[in-house]
Image 1 (cartoon, helix red, strand yellow):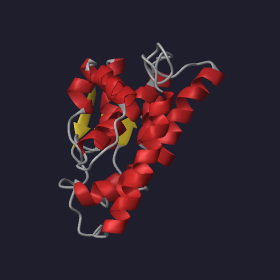
Image 2 (image 1 turned 30 degrees about the vertical axis):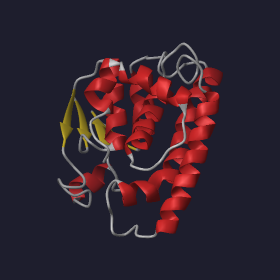
Image 3 (image 1 turned 90 degrees about the vertical axis):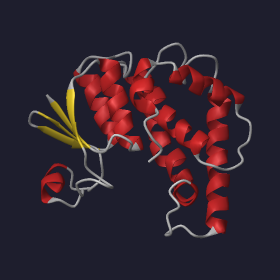
Image 4 (image 1 turned 90 degrees about the horizontal axis):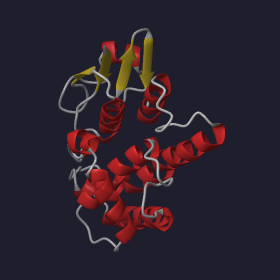
Amino acid sequence: MLRLLGRANSINVRKVLWTCHEIGLDYQREDWGRGFRPVSDPEFLALNPFAQIPALVDGDVALSESNAICRYLAAKHGRHDLLPADPAARAQVERWMDWQLAELNPAWVYAFQALSRHNPDYPDSGGVGKSIEDWAKQMATLESQLGEGWILGETFTLADIVLGVSIQRWLLTPFDKPALPRTEAYFERLRRRPAYQAHGGAGVA
C-alpha cells in the first residue's frame, strides 16, 4: 500500500490526497510536519532530503514534491484523462502545474503567512500589500483563461487539482479581493467533485 507522509491540512498534501481519490487508490497517511513529527527526523530525510511534506513511498520508490507525486500516480495508473500520454496534450497540463508552483504560489506567501497564519516573521504591511498585488495579478491571468469547463476544456486534469487548492487559499485568506466571476464559477464546479469534498477543502494550512 502507498505511504503518504504529511499532515492532512497541508495544501501540498491535499493535492496528493485529491489525486489518490480521483484515481481510486488506497493509501496509508502518516502525520508529519508542523504540529506533528518533524521533517528534520532522519527517517523523513531519508525519504525526502528537501525536508518538505509530502513524501510518498510506493514499494521501492520514494518521491517528494507534490506536483511530481501527482504526475507519477496518474502516469503509473494509466489515468491519461488526468495526465495525457500525448506529449503536446501532456505539456498543456504540466505548464499549468508549473505555473501554479512557480508563479502563483510564490505570490501569496507573504500575505498568507501574515493574514491567515499571523506569523510574526511576516510583520511588514508593505510586504503584505506587495504580496496581495502580485497575487491578484496572477489570479487575473487565471481568470482570463477560464471558460465554462475545466482549465483545459472538457476534460478534468491534474492541472485542475493543483489550481483548485490554490484558489481555495485565495478565497479564504482575509483581504478585499477583486471580482473574479469566472474563477468563482470554476471553483464551484471543483467543489462539487467528491474528491474535493473529501480532501480539497480540508484546511488552509
